[in-house]
Length: 251
Ligand SMILES: NC(=O)c1ccc[n+]([C@@H]2O[C@H](COP(=O)([O-])OP(=O)(O)OC[C@H]3O[C@@H](n4cnc5c(N)ncnc54)[C@H](O)[C@@H]3O)[C@@H](O)[C@H]2O)c1
Image (cartoon, rainbow, N blue to C red; front, side, top):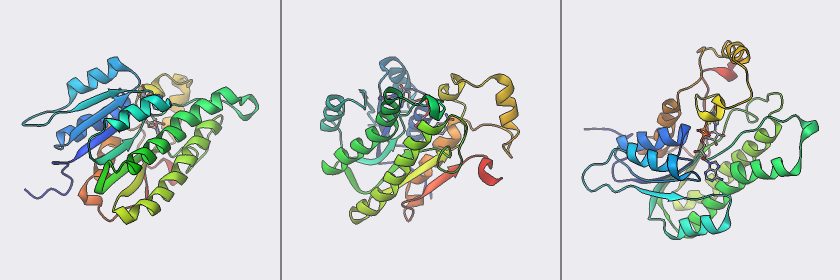
């Protein structure tokens, strides 16, 4: 049956696969026929994700527990990596802190996880020729900081803008090897990252009114956008930031 969105025959690496968007993406990719390589810093949640992946026939999914900010973990993982057709750089953290309270420790940590880890991982995979010709790299960026700003969101904004810039440069540099590079930029998604945040119920209710669709995204809705960019349906799309925001940035 004709299906340009199919991921059959593709091997896809997903970072931050222990929860939220990463888990939903890994599960959805497995349903689309891919072999998954999943990674996270948390062994328990990662093992749980592995048990949720659809597997049939000869498909054997792999998992690596790794702190992507640690040089040795990254090197070990890349050394053991099979050939990939897709890479989803998704692991990330968030912290709300107004400019007057900025400090080096928080700033270094958010930059290390949200910006430098995906950049160095991409570089290592590309240099080791782990990503096949025709492959696709997708970053989970955000509308926050890139398309809009919010109070106290400066560190997150700076880290995601850095990744947005890297995505565009990588798209240009990797095109010669026919590797596409894009991002999905969600607004708020119902994941632990948001559920454990500092916002009260009243603030959330008020915020929801600013969304034309009047709700936050489900992780699966972001996963579907990622599947599109990984698939051959997006074969002529590179260097693109796909906004998935329920209309949030319209007004
Ligand atoms: N949830 C949202 O509203 C939202 C909106 C826009 C963008 N995003 C982005 O989407 C991505 C996923 O977010 P989520 O909401 O699913 O968050 P989440 O907290 O549910 O999942 C993030 C995962 O990353 C892992 N992780 C954290 N630090 C790591 C490290 N050093 N090494 C390896 N793994 C690590 C965590 O263990 C966790 O499983 C993030 O990059 C986030 O910035 C989220």
